[in-house]
Length: 172
Image 1 (cartoon, helix red, strand yellow):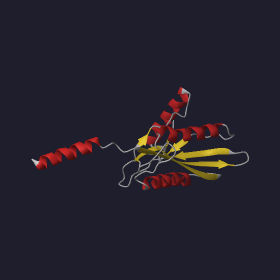
Image 2 (cartoon, helix red, strand yellow):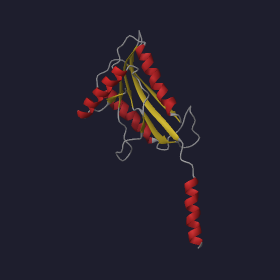
Image 3 (cartoon, helix red, strand yellow):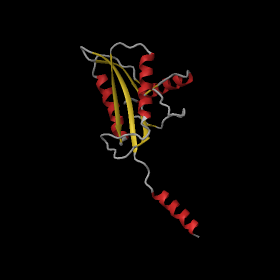
Image 4 (cartoon, rainbow, N blue to C red):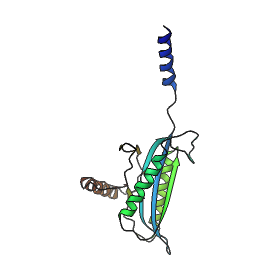
């Protein structure tokens, strides 16, 4: 009887334990040139969801899987190094308990790129794997193309990239 009561209490205790707070992480590399400032290329991991180590806020959080952000940084760096680029590289890492805060950063970068002289083709999204080869949990990115035709063209191009086993896809 005592064993059964202990099992029931353990089951109730684990059932009432709150779910971990999410920590959303987005790592982005911006390739730009000065005078006049022009954004030439943007590579990102997209928004990845990890469990927060505790005490996170919309301003900052710390993922329990701390090496996840390091793997994300490596994935972005490999993609930037994989193709020719001219200009300086700036890395931006946003860690927030709000997926909206993480996504807003990318929207701001795209808006800034549209206000510069360059013609940014799009935002390249690279995959990030967890330690055992599984893909890290991702969250949908905000829409970066306001026009339905541009969004449809981006989706079609991503289908072609997927068929070609490309190392990235475009954020639409």
